[in-house]
Image 1 (tube, rainbow, N blue to C red):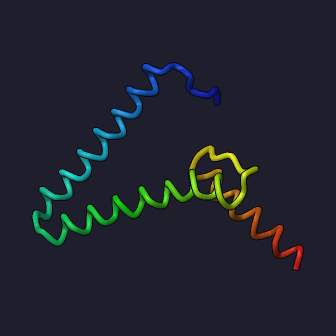
Image 2 (image 1 turned 180 degrees about the vertical axis):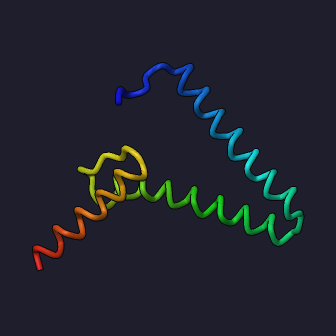
Length: 90
């Protein structure tokens, strides 16, 4: 698959992700309009954002400077390969 380079398309894609997230959150809150559901939803979103930051920034900058983030699946492959490499060294 070719890399996305058109800045307008990249911005539209980002806005579509934002719209999708807001729509999903609103539908969940309309279905279960409680304070507990709202707090859990906010907590889940915050935790996933922090994980994404960890996978993208922290690993690349502080753990393994040779790693280049391409997405969540590339991060999973990185973890699996790293685990196998460390197991072979023991």
